[in-house]
Length: 396
Image 1: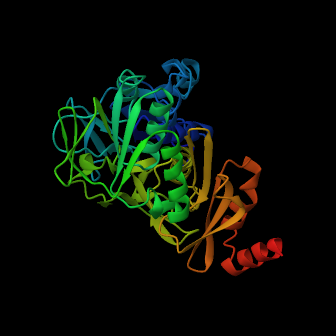
Image 2: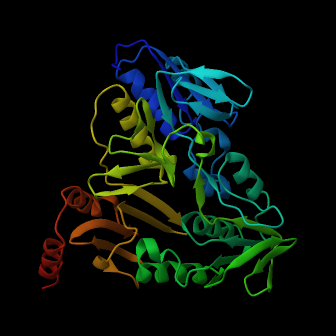
């Protein structure tokens, strides 16, 4: 398939990844049909602000759309919002919708994202869509109580916003140290102390078995009372609709280094697990920047570029007055060292080793320029011994 072929491309997922793929197809010269299918009734909108600016009330919902109407119209999309894809026939090249419609394709990009994991018991709040954020926002404020289950980045952001609005927050985390698997125990303990300093009742090593009326039941049978419960215990990739399609599905749609899952089928965004040759491992990244970059890469490779998708992943988080930025692949790292600043002052840059290479950097309260050289060093596959020599020389 080439940019001049007037063929049919179907993108399932009206997301940041799906929109980036559609725009790239047009930018690269594709003149055929682009069908964009999304199960939400709205055009693609930005999700990171849901747990920050929307939840706090700093933004109104009209700031969320990723593109205005004129820009979307210029793409000439066959947009099908509020329509759910429930199956795909790879042999025939069709996507089946819940209303029985069969949408034919010559190229398919799967960008269906993820959905929040839930707990058994009484229905609780989750935070994935605009409606989710608005419903939770209405439950926050002085005199209100909130239990947040899960102290990952999403739960921590929601807890920080809620506390800032005067809500009495209990933050429950089964691990001994929040986010230790990703950022390391030292950084995790520092982030935990920040919550405590802002009046959050953080309880680590605390598992939750179910949501009950008026709170949550812990693993030991006791109940934490709260008017409102937010469950933020991770997510599941939306791949059920691919069952029986012959496409490889595990923890997400399994793709190669070109984001290809099968002939003419590509994955992009949170739903895609692909082999990143820069790190020599498969990964599935649930971050906004990766979604857009992978959407572009999938579209170009669908058009025949065949270039490996080998990014240095990036994410950010806003918690209280802290800006957290990170590049690389920190999960499963072997060592962390402070390169600049200090944990005690909560202004620092930390670097991470996996094997014999520099694989990540995380900065808290530091200007963006601090991490750029480290980002370049990660992309250059810098050996760890060069990093330690640099750090030891700076300390001398």
